[in-house]
Image (cartoon, rainbow, N blue to C red; front, side):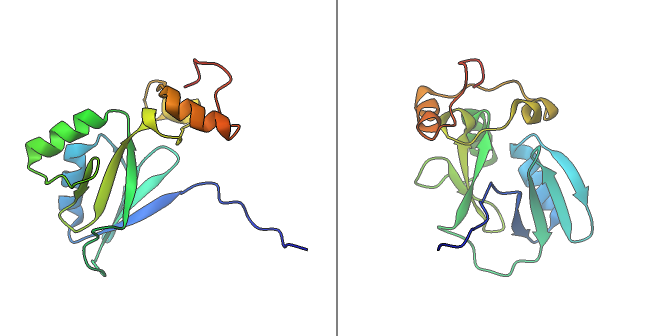
Length: 153
C-alpha cells in the first residue's frame, strides 16, 4: 500500500542572496512596485500579497545562469521598458535578466500563465481583477481549475 504524502500547494517565499540590502531594495524598487514587509540587519522582505521574496545579505554561490525563478507581473512590457532604460542586459529567452548579485530572474505575465491569485489577495494588494488569456484559461480548465465565469479571470 502506498503511503500518503503531503500535497505541495505552492511557494510561500524564495530567498535571493545579495551583497547590500539597500542597493538591492533600490534596484528591485526601480523595476517593481512593492511593499516592504520587514527588514533587519541581514534580511529584507518584499511583500507579494500572500507570498514574499526575502533578500539576504551574503553571497554563498556563483551567479546563476540557468537556475532562476519566474516573477509574475501584471504588465510585462512595462518591466521590459524599465529594464532597458536602466541598461540591464536582457538574456536570450523571454524576459530574463541577471541582477547585480548574480540572481537570474524571469519576468512572466500574469495573464498568460496558469498561476492565479485569489480575488481577495489581489484586492488586498491594491490590484484590479486581472484577465487571463484563452490559452491560460484552457490550461486551467483542463485541470479542473478554470473560472466559473469569464469575469473571474
